[in-house]
Image 1 (cartoon, one colour):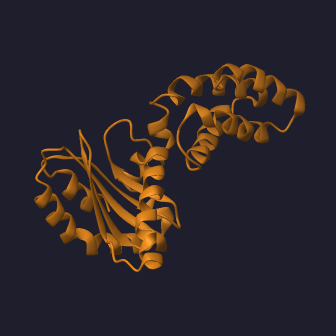
Image 2 (cartoon, rainbow, N blue to C red):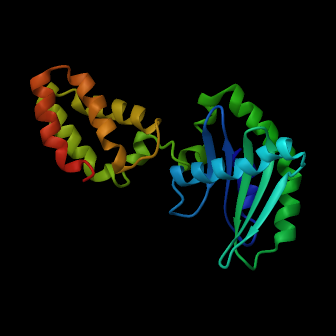
Length: 216
């Protein structure tokens, strides 16, 4: 999937590209900063509705072109529950982008089949990680976790001792697989840590020590 998306991404005028796959819910992307996993997921769900109208309206729409004042979006249906989205500059050679992406549709559809056959392997793709499925090594160097991890680790060490560092890596890795790396999800992460602590008094102390990290 990575190589196919890169073939599109390097075309002149292409700002970003992503493939949205449901069942399993995985997004593969090379997009500009600001397009986080939740944004891409919302775009994918919204655009899928266009193609789902085919059956009820007796249509056969396989691609959609949308033009905005500062960008263009080209959407192509790959197979049931999967689509390709290309973000372009307004002055981009749309014909070239359209032709190149059409040539890759068959391979992309086969790629989606492989994703569904082996989701765990698919999540190891570079583009999948950029879409939100970050691993601990990447997440610990980016906000909001860059500042939060030392606080979580110190608080957990006071609760359970020297194995805290190992558990932080394990639990944060599990948390990252559940959605976007966002401060809004920190309460969920705190709950995961408390499950490992398993002592009411120590859990209370841990929650107090990490309360400043939670969204207000």
